[in-house]
Image (cartoon, rainbow, N blue to C red; front, side, top):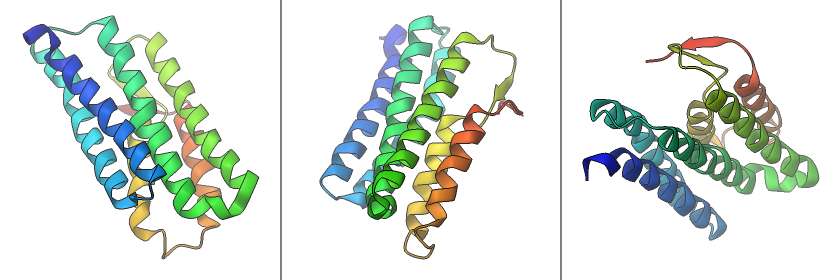
Length: 166
């Protein structure tokens, strides 16, 4: 049981990301937001649990990235596309796809890099959680705001600035 605790948390993260996508598809946007935030909470602890139990593994690292692209790439992009970008047609769709692609690139770069105590670029968890948080102001901001927010977050994910891990 101990050897699977961290992976169970990661799979739970992925499950909430998948549920967020399904909630968005059924226009239950508030549930989608809740599920993404629960996924973020779970993501915060899977690595800590793995390190605490001495169960850090390559499988766990890869599984974490797969869950992150679902929970913090696809789920937030789809949610905010449906809420604010759908009226922009192809351009809105491209903004959502750009966010997902840059998130995947950032995760791939993370997976092939050596752990050094720093993140390179904005972590997808932060970008996706921030994008989801803007749901609460979606009707305050002009929808065109998101035509700038999506590519800014996407570029921050693939940028080369470093952040100290906390």
